[in-house]
Length: 70
Image (tube, rainbow, N blue to C red):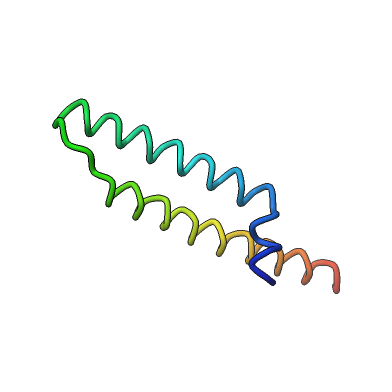
């Protein structure tokens, strides 16, 4: 499965959008509580969500292809 296929998948886009939204919300809450911006944790969180999203979409595609062959 190519990276383009993963990025064009709507489930991946939804997961990534939710991950970015939650990351930004966490960034804002951290800023309000401490007065400091924690950009590193935002980047790591979004990267982790993207990694798990790509793995899930790849797995779902594999299972779909396997079901079609049976």
